[in-house]
Length: 375
Ligand SMILES: Cc1cc2nc3c(=O)[nH]c(=O)nc-3n(C[C@H](O)[C@H](O)[C@H](O)COP(=O)(O)O)c2cc1C
Image 1: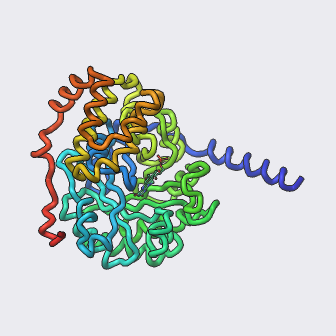
Image 2 (image 1 turned 90 degrees about the vertical axis):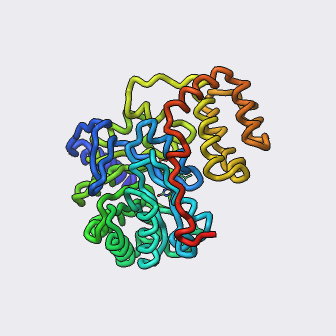
């Protein structure tokens, strides 16, 4: 009886709170700023480990993301000049504005990593206080820092003092379900020098279950005077507009919805976007494959790309056996050949796409790894 009554009150309260928030219409195509960096649209492509390679980010920019982010980069890996970690600092000329995200728990090492990120040509240094994965949290990094405000603020201040770039922080709501830690921590991080905050309002324990609770995003917006980016479960234009209007966030971040589906981005910034044809899908995938091979090399790319085949070709776009066939192919040349056989018209689309793209050799500003002595 009591439980039912209190549940009822809770529902009514949250509904009232939502209705009483000011509703602000934000044009998704309008520009905004993080510090001095101008961002041309209200769409941010999420940092995603194992996904956010250069090809993904450049494609994100082409399809309407105003800001793209690298996956999280280990500050310890940068400190030790680990070759693969240094590779994450390769930035292409046509992906700006770009945030490179770093994670770690030691302020001086994070400051050093931030300087390397700035030297590599990033526009923003983003700090990860959200990663819930044990491999990261057991080192005192990622989401654990939500429970250690003094150290978290120390990291932000060390990083902000180390570079001239704006510093942003991405966090979860807290460690445990129902936590509101982010609301206390957020203002402290801004005082320490954060020029923007991104909130993925799930707990670390939740991982990706349940729903992102953007009522918390609205509360965070109320408490800080820097732009807040809303992350979590934003998959459509209607949802993006609703989250912007009810939270007062400056921008929305799109993650899983854009995996193998850059058209989700253009459908959010541009409401009249038609569904892509099979030829367009095959052509984008081939371009993605080629760019990824250039970035990671054939051997690493073959394994890395497998998940992208289902993402691109799923959603009823191609028959299931076809996706399975691609995953089994041993070389990316075979993948390309098979895609062109299934959608011959993709060849023309690909040519058009390549004509529109800046010449890859001019664009790829390879990080001079030798600068850092990386192997
Ligand atoms: C495969 C994967 C990898 C991720 N890696 C990172 C990461 O490196 N850094 C980070 O801050 N968030 C990471 N995230 C979280 C996303 O940036 C985003 O906050 C989350 O997926 C919720 O947004 P969505 O519902 O739009 O996917 C990752 C998410 C996924 C699914």
